[in-house]
Length: 576
Image (cartoon, rainbow, N blue to C red; front, side):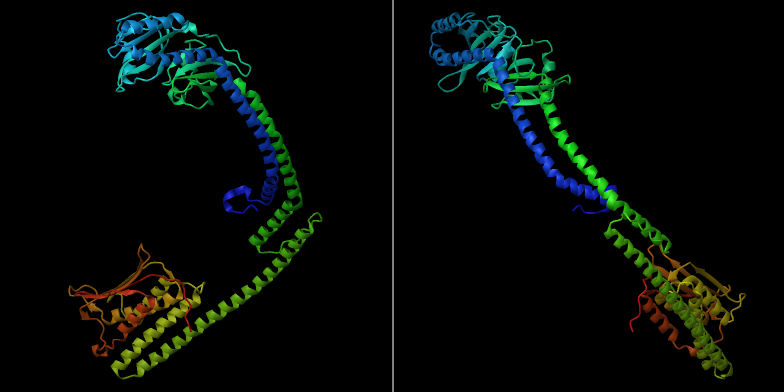
């Protein structure tokens, strides 16, 4: 089965996937037909290539016979010449006799390491030391056939067969040279039964061209562009297709005439492979067309019977998802029974979802109303407690008692303010902390009877939203910190107005910082200093721990500062 996925785009569709599955099922049958056809084609192509190799050898039969005969003669002469070197006259007599008896050899001679003709059919004592062929050969003496436009001694244009001469200690003291004139070779354009040959070349082991049937004109252009001739000279027979030096498509065959010495290369026109290409194309196109026709029929059937009904159902599902309203049932008699069952199940499911969502919305609304009512009643009760506490404060004659009750009243009013904000907020799961803290600040400063002309209160509270499990302890912490600031507020020594600073900011790394600071000096409040209980500091530490924050409060000569830092966290339900 074709796996689904988001990464294949329009291919990830039911009709396409079913067609792909059917295509995969039919593919082996078509592949078997194509493979069998290509086996026959490969066999025919191999036979054709073998025929090309045979035609290449047949076209160079004259050169092959001459080279094999004369190379064999040079090999046979080596031990005879090596034995007759003590007698130059006898050596020259043997070589002269060879030239006279052979119709294909124009010169035979022995060249010593100084480049002088030691003995030969002619030119005794002549020097070839200045010849580049002599210099290159002495650097690497071995059996070799080279082409020379004009032999140094005989003045003949042709091929020079060279055999190294070695002494008993295997050191080279010269070489035997046989010159075969070009006229000895039958260099007529080849006529073959397989293909049209553009040229037939004979090449030595170093990639140097010896003979060419087509002649020297344009010879370099006919050579392969991306193949070096020395790399092609090996024991194996090669047939390959590539372009020549000027970009024309050509077929090349390379066959060894005498391995390690001479080779023949055929250059064929590309029309020779066209019949094979035509056969291959016809063998591939017919199965491919049948396979495509089967896929087209399968696609039409799947789309007509299944896909169009599924798409109609998909449109109904999308419409229901966007509107959350019941979608009229589209009864289609052409729809298969299985899809009609799916359609009926969808209709029943949408009716249940709409009914259940309506019930859930009613239930959530009732819970929100009840929860807001709870906050409202708690706020009223706390305000009632604050009012009773205020009555008790007015009746109490003891200063310390009034101070303690006043602190209790501030804390109760802070809780009442929190519940008032919870009652007024739209989303009970999140609280706008900035508005809550501003309300607390205004309430506490007003309750402390700090006139604007007596105390400068500055606030810098940035917008911030927290879950209740952090918003409530943060509000209570501000209440305690601000109460302490009012309690310990002093007049600066420079005579300026006493001040209280409150700021709440969020740093770039997400950390939240609350800082409450006040000026120190001569106390502004007339409260009894004996009434210090230390409960506020304990509550601040407890609320800081509940926030999971750090307390970096410190005192300075001119100020007292409470600084709390913490990170916002997700809502976590309390464990009963």
